[in-house]
Image (cartoon, rainbow, N blue to C red; front, side):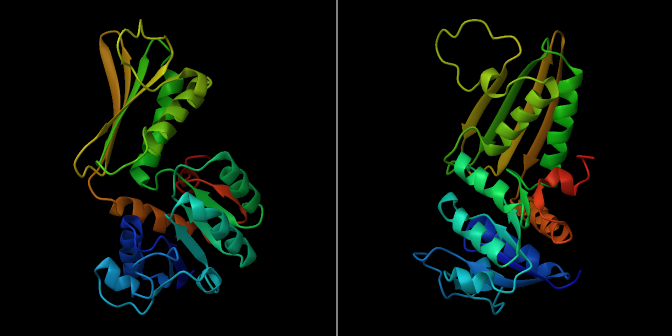
Length: 270
């Protein structure tokens, strides 16, 4: 499929600008829409100019009906308070949907599941190909190493990140829980301070650091007696998330309705 018509929700944000650049450089894709909130200072501006690559002839709009008209796929890295309306519009106009926004509550997740019966949706807390391979490997290792190996997940992000642990850290922890067939919520430890007592056997520990302009580093440590196995992923530029999202979009437009993740796209869930 060539000339895939792509729309970007949250077009003026850091991720939106990166995605604009990747879509523009892809010979199989055509940037056909850029959506932002009604109070966005860049409304009416050419999205290519905002992204720093010159005029592309596509202006940023807040008119959802115009934006979704005649698109093949939407890539959404906007905020949680607009996703429900975006999803409903995508279903109405039969538009495939790549969702990279994190911090979704249960109501949104229920809506996503319902919408996936009508359109294909990829939902992932991290669109990086390397991270999704790390998720897969973490699951496999967790199943091979029993609870005599303590699991600690460390992450560091830039000083403007507002949630902790990161969505990717939580996703890694959930893969540990799946691999060991244990309840994630009941076996997660998010903070340690003061006299914490002995480490609970089988628990999944998290630690978060914030500083500077770090895009995102994650380390999963399986710590046993006299040895430590670590899975490390370091992101030096958020273009890797844009590359993954665009690759996911190209795959998604060929799929039937359903809810997918990046591991489906990579063939890791077979």
